[in-house]
Image (cartoon, rainbow, N blue to C red; front, side, top):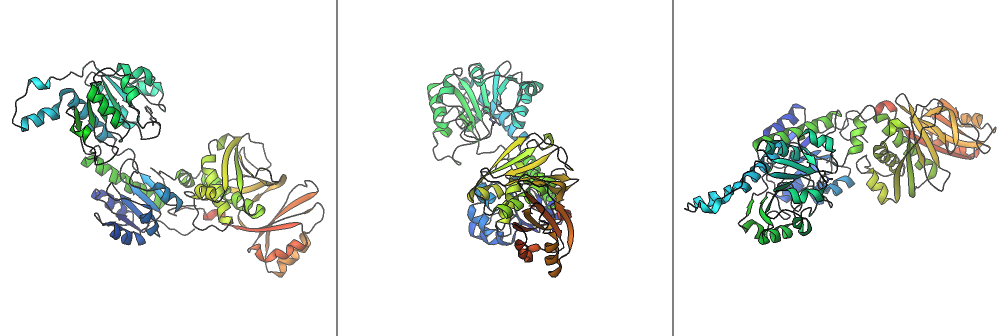
Length: 542
Ligand code: 9EZ
């Protein structure tokens, strides 16, 4: 495949200078054009291979459609709230972010908020600026010995925990994906949420915004808290339900809240911002030079890794793509694609269920990247243009193919290793089994007929089935000779139900050999890229 790489990348927001420097050092043209108007952006994006944004640029479906050459969109920061990921995925455009670059800055702001809540520092400062000396109004609480509930124990939650432990706080918490042993290592005792609520003097949230975390603090959970609990949200607007928070503040059930994020930004409803026990910032969690520099550097490094085909980090919609860069999994992706293409060639327009079954321990969980690989081959075989590992499953679903991945036990196959990939169309005879020989994809079995010598899935192939013992090969060879096509390999299957399959490797595409159909029951031609041309160096391998 041609080395597509990344020619030109547009940086449409203010980013740390190191971002453009790192791109240029890798031979990528970096165009720094912050502050473009939406029409200017639509014009500038047309000839760009990549786009990097921070928060200001809204990467809408319209922008994505205008980016005819666009292969990758990077966000220098956590989350991709300002990118239409669905529209990008449909176009096969990879979306990346830098999930960790902001963590320390977010954790530090959170700790600052906890200290501010405990001593009402912002309110006291405002009172001083207002010309007052109001000492009685600002009696605070000491953090030492108080309990801090940390909901979400990823990178930010644990940095908050270790810092607040230095103030003598007891840190308890909950996270469904972190084990109690892991959290004990950074001094957080995990408890079920129902036990956490009544124990906390302070609660801070550090979860992504998901259906399961939206309104994590609500009327019902506030009611289970200690009276006067203080709450911090420096994560995502909506994790603390804003209506419930206002009601809890008004009743005194909540003694104070610190908000860096809002469901609507900037918030048009100012009721929370104006409440005397609320302190707040305009989404400043990542607003440090260090975090900006780290995110700018990380997104540039991720673009360079992609351009060189060496690594894929921070991908939001490209799990399968990352596996395509791994030398261990890349041949399996090539196999999936080849089997998908072969299935499409044999079965014609595929509709309904397509089962992708991975056999053997080495392919555990491989369905997540082999399903898109199979779908890529299937859609390419059906004539779809612009299919890649990013959009294949979405496009397959829209074409009426529901790909399901399952896992099974490996059956030792002649010449195969201890793992295999099986495709089946339930309710039809179509079933393919393939594996790898070294790093070459091979076909082991076709509709139940095993090949004693597995068939390399590369180059130009002619497959046909004929009654067992009919020996149409001489006639087919005659046709090949007449068409000046050389035979490079021959593989025959065992007989099943009185029939045998033959697979011929040819020097030229076998399309002209439709005449073979006179000598056999059924014939199929397909061409696959030579294995060696796997996707090294391409910006977006298929
Ligand atoms: C949910 C969570 C944490 C949480 C954290 C993450 C998916 N998920 N859910 C409820 N990463 C605390 C309470």
